[in-house]
Amino acid sequence: MHAPIRDGINARPIRIHAAGKALDQVQATLPKLRPELPAAFFRGDIIADDGSPLTPDSSVRAGQVVWAFGGVTDEPAEPITLPIVEENERWLVVDKPHDMATMPRGSHVASTLTVALRRQLENNELVAAHRLDAATAGVVLVTKARQWRGPYQTLFERGLVTKEYLVVADVSALGSQAREHLRERMTVSLRLVKPKGSLTTHTVQGEPNSVTEILCERLGAELGAFRVWPTTGKTHQIRAVFEHLGMPLVGDELYRRRPKKTPLQLLAHSLEFVDPITGENVMARTQQTLALWELAHE
Image (cartoon, rainbow, N blue to C red; front, side, top):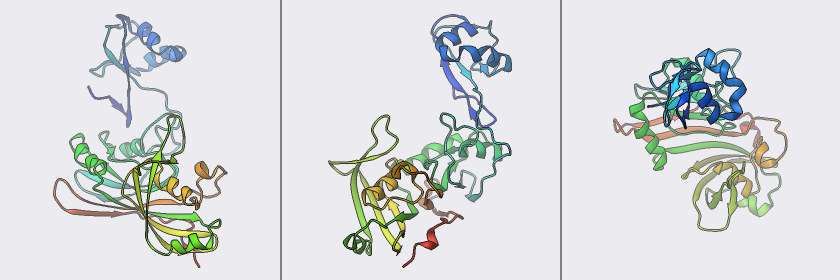
């Protein structure tokens, strides 16, 4: 069974290990949540496969999967409305703001793009075909129904989507020779690895597993404005590559290790692909701009 969804939020699966009463067996499976479970049963947040709420005394069997809806700590005070820049009957392209996670995870649930958009459009089948870092703004392709997820997710997995980003980087530490190299479009091939438990992606020795095309639009004494085309999709690829080149992205508190004074200056500017269902060419562009884009000048 697919996870039940309530108000845009997927329930969590709980596999029962032994036959008995529902409360006892869920507590045995999730001992850390023991104090919260009686209230969860009372609210109807623990349900069976058919969607019916379980009571504490309901009988459950070994191997059975029940579902739990948890408390939401990031419920927004007002409904979130996200701008849609392109749409048809199978998908839409939404313009994600800075500092919003694409998908629910951990403490980020109701204020994520997925849940907010499901509520906005009253469609619990909406699923992003790819993801952007929470700190990154710009266009995200979202499928409207379960049957469309595979075809469009596969486009991204196979590298069949051309993604263009805009970047403003701190170039103040670059020497004259490095600055001269930026005058021409360049290809950067690196081996990027994100170790388990690490928040950042590292550049290591070895066979390159990432390719990033970079074109400098404007280069000033402090700031540089760039167009970037990652042809691979490694975690934090653009952020890690610019850090490696000695020109970290402005507003990147994760890689620069300093408090940010402005949102991360990284914008998913456009997506271009051939629709796998119709064969039509699709180009979707953001309606946003970077706050410092115009300040990077000679």
